[in-house]
Image (tube, rainbow over all chains, first blue to last red; front, side):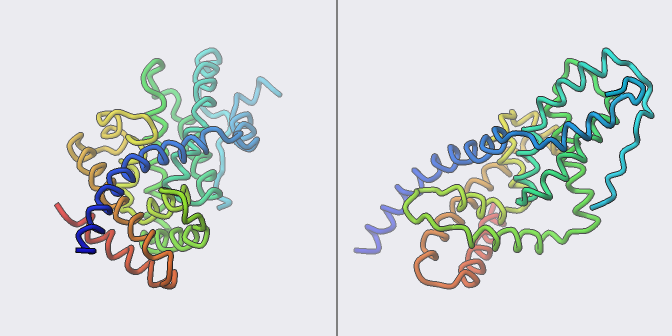
Length: 55
Length: 203
């Protein structure tokens, strides 16, 4: 009896969790997207630039 | 680690086109970092990977058709880079186990329905091809078709990987919720990994 109630509740929770996972997944990804880009990236790209154009 | 030699200025020069390319490439850096972070599970390794991918894209800029999907193109480069490095030096199981253990230590918010740390832990434990499919479609904003192109597989394969990933992740997170009160992290890891393996093998 207890087990039944528990598994029904678990199913409901599972459904909610599945939605929450989607939201959190995007949140996790966007968290990194919104971080400031380390200078290193632009430095490397700048160095790879046409050497003649300077700066 | 120190083998990021960059060939300076060996490509044929086309300044206006290069400028356009570069501007767009720069806007993609944050996305490349995020994708790399989810693949490696480690911020430092992720930035190394993202930088390598960025430079590979830059070096290959002549082969890119301006106006087509540069995000998908660079993600494909990053992904290829990731797997070629992994083949060289990493053992999948080691990587996953280490990353998962590192993350498990950080799980400390029993209140939240899905804590971000739990999610990271769960992602680390998914097979790589499921993880990337879920990330591309569920977080990266790619259509199944684009994700299939990035991963070099059929659209149906991506769909099935995404759905398996969702199910396995759910199971991992549920198991994590039980295991937090009581058993040791090591036991929990074993149980979770076994569960994840069983679930991802289904179907």
